[in-house]
Length: 534
Image 1: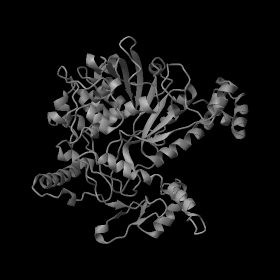
Image 2: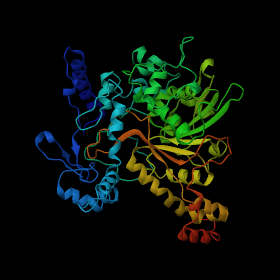
Image 3: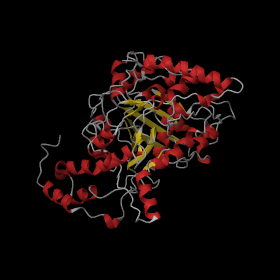
Image 4: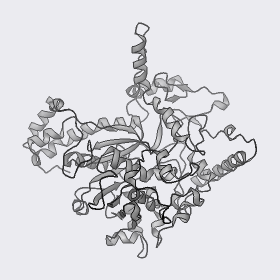
């Protein structure tokens, strides 16, 4: 079985060929194809068009790829792990000739609406000179990292990552089948957050390992700061690069999508703050809980971008998760991570006075493996909002209690997911999670509170303008699939208002009538005890 180190060596060879082609007069880098091998959506069998094998693509949604008619039919009703089949996600009924052209166009739109975002996703990648689109529509991030000399595990500063085929660490509460016949193992000696074992943070140069002109610096010469955030209009990668005076050949977006996605969630998805909320006379405070952090632990200084974008704001950002717990428990006394055991911030930053002199203090909560509202460290430190990136809400048991808590307490909660279709599946599960908990919640909530809890709500899903540029290399589907690709507002405000003001997003009031079957559950809860709450 190949390891990430093996794959990295091959990737550096490919990057050398790309660099040679891009640097020589008359070079044609577009002729170098780094597409991945397609895989059957049903059986995972690898397929290659170079050997003359025909790829079967679903005629309805144009996304799922199969190796044979047998696999396509087999996946239609039941998925390979016993999940819903492709029929659930792509209604295959053909439009008859008797239908009008307008109706046919509408049904085609419904079938292919996820695929309609492909041009927008590609347009974002094409902003960057390094945004090489392969023939299969994917983007090889690892190739571009190797091109800039920053692909690897230990010793690559903010870019350090374990590699391998799994996008996340395997955790004790992971659900589902995590195996694959084409698995690439990560680098064994690597630990997310290993830089926190040092006694001080890396500076910009050591962290980024890039030319100075390509680095979004955090410390500025007088008069060289970006404009104050309240006067800027940072809404996407183009406006951010221009605001930061960065050339588009900087690969900074390949890392900065983490802090800028948090900014997007807070400002444009949850509406808990905005760059104009604070002022020199009235500073604002912001307490954010960041759940499920992994590779982000290697790049804590990059979250200083929040202080630059939100003037006159004092931000407390606390990280939770399995990787956080692991790194804090392993910390030696002199390390950065050891500060978490003394309840001290592990990183602090203050923006220039000309940008509002905002502050950022990052904490690590390493007492438990997961965020749980029953822990005193959380009940004594309830946040203004909860965020999680590439969350996988149906992949980990621990998310169930977070989803329920935020609905009950009207706690703003926003996440990102890789694919729009995955986000929709998760959205559809929220009402089931709530209904399942009704018998346990009944004894400690009034009837009115329970009715409010089961009311229909909106869960807006949007393409994230601060997605990591480029389609992830997934061979079995052509659906847009991106790191921090889509945002989901689980509980959030409809507009920016003061704390305590109710502007949470719900369905229109005429829909606020509990369904009959839910109402029956509400009636039954009045006599339920608390004994089975857990």
